[in-house]
Length: 407
Image (cartoon, helix red, strand yellow):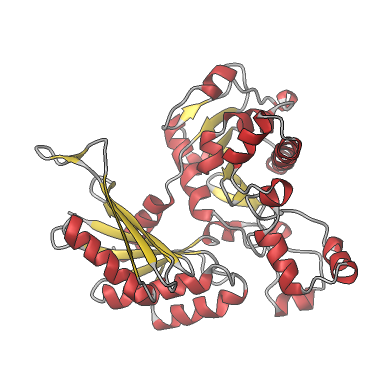
C-alpha cells in the first residue's frame, strides 16, 4: 500500500490525514490544537472498515485527549501516540511522503516543491507576506521532519495555482518601483481547492478541462472566487494577502483603503489595530457579532435585522464578482460552489446567482434545495451555464501532488 500523510499546520494547531493513495481512501484524520497553552487538545478519527473487505464503513472511531502540548514537536508525538493506540498501524501504512500545506509561496514557488533547508528559509522569509499563516506552516514542517526523518517532505503552496495569472490581473496600479521592491502584487489563495474543483467539475461533466471556462466559488470562513480558463487560473479575488475580495467570516474583503487612513486619523487606530480589525473583527462577525454563516442565517430567519443585512452584503459581493469574471472570460460554461458555505447553504447559492438569467444562469430550486454530499447539478435544464455543487478535498489534492512529486 502507498500512504501519504497530509499536514496542515497553524500557529497553535495542526490537522492531519493519512490517505491510502491506491484507493484514495482516508484511513485516519485528526487535529492537535491549543499548542503552547496550559492544556492542549487532540482528536483522532479512524475510518471504520468492514473487516472482511477492508472497505471503509459509515461510522468512524473517534478518540480525544487533553494534555500539555508545549510545541509542534510534542504535538507530532501526540499524533504518533494516537496512531499507536487507536490505529491504523503506521508500520503497515507507513507514509512514503509527507505533504504540507503552505499558504504563501510568493512568486518563487509555482509548483509542489521538495522541502530542503533552503526551501524552509524561503518559507520563513515569505512570512512577511503571510504572518498569520506561514510561521505555523514552517513549525509544522520542521517538527514533521524530525518525526518522519526518513521520508521526503513536499510543500504545496496555496498561491501556486495562480501563477498563471496574466500581468494585467496580478499588477496593482501603484508606484512600480515600490511594488517591485516590496513584492506587491496579487498572489491569490485557495489555489489547491480551486484547481481540484475545476478538474473535478470537468470529470463530473465528462468534458476536457481544457475546453471549459469556469468560475469557482470557494465559500467558507475564508472565501474567494477564481476564473479558470482551460484549467488555468486567469483571475482571482484574493490579492497580496487573503484579505481582499469577498466578505468572509471575520475578514472584510474589498474595502476603500481610505477607510484605514480615516480610522487612523480620526479614531486613533494604529496599524496593528487596523490589521486586527480587518482580519479578525470584520466580515460576518463585524456586521452581526457572529462569524459563522450558519448562525447568521439562523438569526436572519428569526428576523434579526443586522443578520439579514449581512447576508445581503455577502451575496451582493459574490454576484458582483460572478458578473465581472463572466466579462473577463467572455464565455462561462460552468459555475461551481464549494467549501463549507458553498456546499451546504442553498440560500446563499440561490441568492448569489439570482437576477443573472440574462447571462444564461438559472438555478433549479428543487435541485438546489435537495440534500446531497456528492457533486451535483443545481442549474435548470434550460440554463446555458451549468451550475454545480462540487465538494472540495484539499487534503486529497495535496496528497496527489505530493505523491506525483516524490515519484
